[in-house]
Amino acid sequence: MDHSPQRELPSAPLPLKKSAVPGPPPSTAAPARRSHWGRLVATVVVTVGAVTPGLMVPALAAPVPGAPHLSGTAFGAAVTCFFACTAAGAPAARRIVPRMPVRAVLATVALLTAAVLAGLAVAGQEWQLCLLLALAGLGNAFTQPVAARVIAADIAPGRHSFAGGLFGASLGAGPFLPGLLVTLVGAPYGWRPALWTAAGLALLTLIAAALARPARSGPPAAEAGRPEVAAGSPAVAAPAPRTVGRIVVAWSAAAALATIGNNVGAAYFIQIGAASGFSAATAGTLQMLASVLGIVVRLASGGLADRAPHRIPWTVAGMMLTGAVGLGVIVVGTPAAFVAGALLAVAGGWGWTGLLLAATMRLLPGESARAGAAMQGGLFAGAAVGPLSFGVLSGHLGISVTVGIAAVGPLLGTLLLVTGIRALAKGAAGRAAADAPQAPAAVRADGDRRR
Image 1 (cartoon, rainbow, N blue to C red):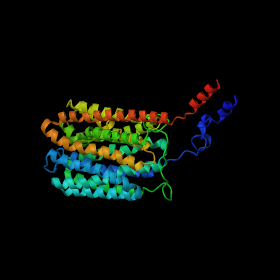
Image 2: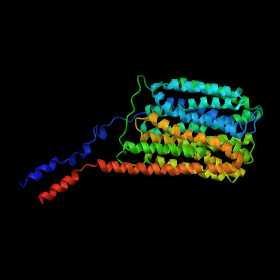
Image 3: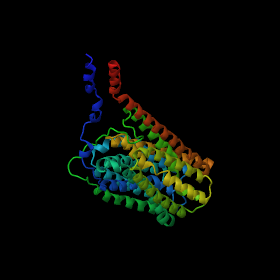
Image 4: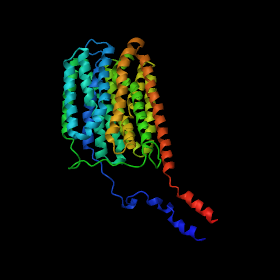
């Protein structure tokens, strides 16, 4: 009888802990998956065109020959239609994108963008601008879900942050084209020729859409989920699905708040530059430089984030805070302050978009369209608030004060994002504790009975 507890010891579940997760041992694991970048590059090209209408109209609201005689509020209302329809169309895009070929989605978006820009070139009334930009916003709603789908299907998980940065570069390149067209076409020749040129360039993105072929033949493979948390903390257990849902909502709201301020710096870059003492052509050149710097920041931060995926949300928080600081510097109102603040706001403050998409995809493994739609909705919901608010407030308070108010948005977004990060770490730790095996306690109790 004294030996019975000893015979029960080997049957305790403690030695089985290492083999609890099925699958081959690390030494026999499958080789690392290769990345295929063709479709993602095509998606980036089409996305640059898709965001152009929403940024082209406010850029041409600056002193440009032939511009329609509309108030700042009217321009703000038209641009709000673009961003609001992008946010409103994100849930539908989330459901449609997985059911359509990637090339079909990209080609539709490219054609719609070219048609809208051509329509803007002949429009001159407020309701026409609102209607056309609303259509462009619905097309733009498909870009982020399709990008998330392509990243999940074509890019190895270890390169998702860089891929997110590459897609985020399309938003960074968004202000580049309006700045270029204002400088080279709008300032010397007028408003309408600049829009016709933009329409022609958007039509060329159809070539990229046609080349967006899948990396392999046959039906696409299903997205694989991963059990570990790779978005907020290096915990070994994922938080509960309800916790994940709340964190996604918090991150989407943080993106919206940060975008309210950062969109003011991007969409009204030329107008703010003109108020700071620059000509429209010079402000357009500075906008191009800020866009190039923004692209570099997105690519570099994405590449570095792949080395430490659990730090991505903290990097995003730092970039949001940089945007708030940049807008605060612009408030000074001098040319030098505008250059320094605008570079921080557009390059650093906008550099987090691709990283937050990558972090959300890691938080929602196997649900890339949901991750893309959540970030799309947050980004463009905030972007919808910025233009109209800027037009109304700047008319009553002045541009400098309005930019200072806009700086509150990314500051609040930073705080909300950090709240989500802490909830993610707490939820993962709680799930790990709940799922921990109870074998050690049983062994101790058995040993007590032996003694």
